[in-house]
Length: 552
Ligand code: C2O
Ligand code: CU
View (cartoon, rainbow, N blue to C red):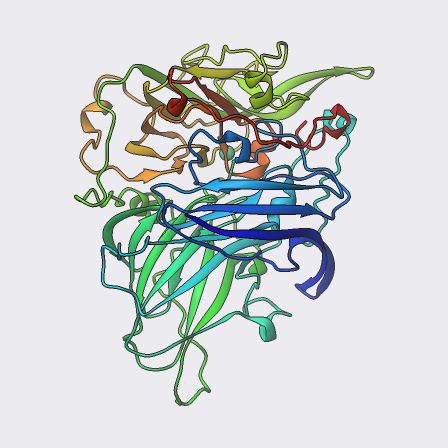
């Protein structure tokens, strides 16, 4: 059913954080942006008006959009920017997704402030596979930058290294909380009644690190992840990667009082470097209703791991399992037709200009560093425009090393627009391999558009082709759209290519994405109208090559 027609206004808004007033882009003047609430199986129409002075697009992260890549959003992949003063209507088709997803700008670093949660309630008469919650709450963790992260980088500037500045602070529902100077008054408060069970819709919208999250004295039960239900997992903290979403039950069974909800960076790149105090903890307060002495400081979650705690981060994510019930069945591919081994690295490319040849930081998948074309891949594919991309994304790296342990040899990564073409309904397995690169090694939260995939395995070190598959979980692997590839480790995912179209996959650290850690699947039509990409809507934003920005 059609739930709604929603209007989003993208514009400049003045906000004060960390004692500093700043102009940032927002949707409808709010940071984070408005919550889009739908029921399972709905279709929503969202009309985005661009009042900014640069082009923008929006992505509905985790919504599979069957046969409808036209509304998926990534710039130069499925559309060109919505130019200043123009608007575009996205058709967002929900199918099996349930729980929590989110939306965000997908054209440049504007997404730091242009994002919000999507809450997907059960469809009518369907109910929850757990006791019905007494209330629901949205918790969005985001980055805040003191400096401007200007999206308007001219093409010629990008010959130099461009790197997204680190977040100055992290926020919960838009506020850094009272551990930061200047933030005391504005700390986000969530009022709860005692003796109730609430469902938290948690989103990690942060630009640059994974996050731990916990609530003082309260246990958490994770029941959903990335828009799918999981087996209830009792835990004192969660680890959530940028791009990921979770549904978490919390019962207010503690003495009436005030308790911190805290998020802390999980930094796998520099686990041993102490972060600035402002950056360490984003806090909000869970506050019981009723009267009680309100003098003491709120209880801080003792279980919140320290930010370099690799064991805490890795052990949490390996405990997630699909619900895999009769009502929520899973379908793990078992007859793989396409095997890929994809090495993710932060390395260099060589650029030559008048002043000679320099090496520039780049990020790559199998040594290919993505270069955005002037016309979106989807239109080029649909209209058979040649010269926009090549269909030769490699299924394996050009050379094998001990990726996990060695300083990688000077890799010759090349900028290219290489895509991988899949036949309809192919069963795909991708083993993603983390590296110890030239730069610091780090996790990579890898996100696939248009699909959810099964995470069948994780491990440390180099993937072993003979022995590691024996340990794959084909019974109840979690179904996710974003998986954290462990630094110097590997993860294996599987999916069936049943959604024809053009689908981006990339690292959800924006710095790495900007540096080219992405590629595209083109999934061919299946031969019938019901298995083919829909026609484009009557209006798509036109492509002008002058609109090339940020993305190299
Ligand atoms: Cu959350 Cu390509 O996006
Ligand atoms: Cu990355």
